[in-house]
Length: 301
Ligand code: SAM
Image 1 (tube, helix red, strand yellow):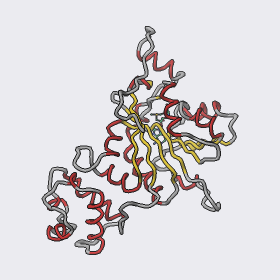
Image 2: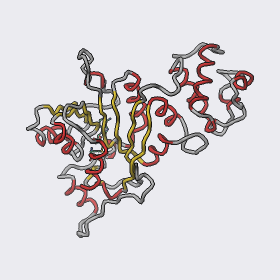
Image 3: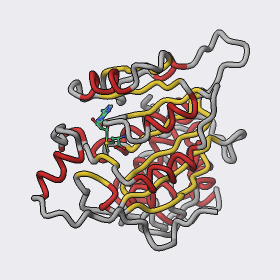
Image 4: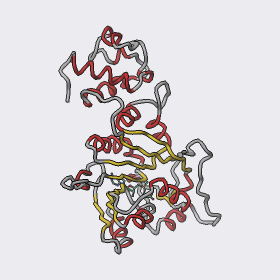
């Protein structure tokens, strides 16, 4: 069971009298953390162990890490599996990573933007039983939401076994939120459409160099074997959900009026005077499937 609601773990700061900038540089082995790449490097050994235990990497599995940075998670994972692909955008970190793990021939570094990266190339689809991807990463917070949407598209192709991410706690709350809460929205609905979402534990700012301003949390996403509420057309579901949440405070009758009439919403046993956060995933699928069969407007793909 997760200890998501237990008191959070805080990496304790050392008592040495160094300036904050010096401490960060020392801990980061002379690499200056880049804000634009969302670089907050993990340095707390207990937290790193806890994350690796949650991932439970095993030899023969197909792991890929997004943003290995200085290798905090990379090292113990690679020790367990002997093989790992990583995607890193910061050119300055690539030679370090290659040097650090030179004795692992099956450690492969892809230099570039994970948002543009085609993860299908890591799955040997020609093989009889291709090993599905296990995606891990202490994700750069500035791009975590688009990255999660990008990665969900691979679960659609049945290429993913599971995903373990460190994210801002607020993003994990949104991923896991149910209807009727302020965190509930497009991210959670689409993540829960494809995956079971398990928030695992909270990590305080002190576990990182430099420390971020907010709490972080680890989340596990496991693609459903069988989708609980399959829709006829995923693009229409995405459009309906996007449209419904485009104005959170407005009712469905207003936000969805270009897609479906009030009468038709009500014919699905859904109250059109509700705000978007009141509807379950199942109800969004009902609306989307109705729209798929009865488009009011040409459907934009
Ligand atoms: N995994 C390391 C750790 O836990 O200490 C570093 C985590 S740091 C929060 C995020 C990492 O993602 C950095 O190494 C950063 O350079 C990398 N990164 C940022 N944007 C990226 C992108 N678009 N594609 C791939 N890597 C990215």
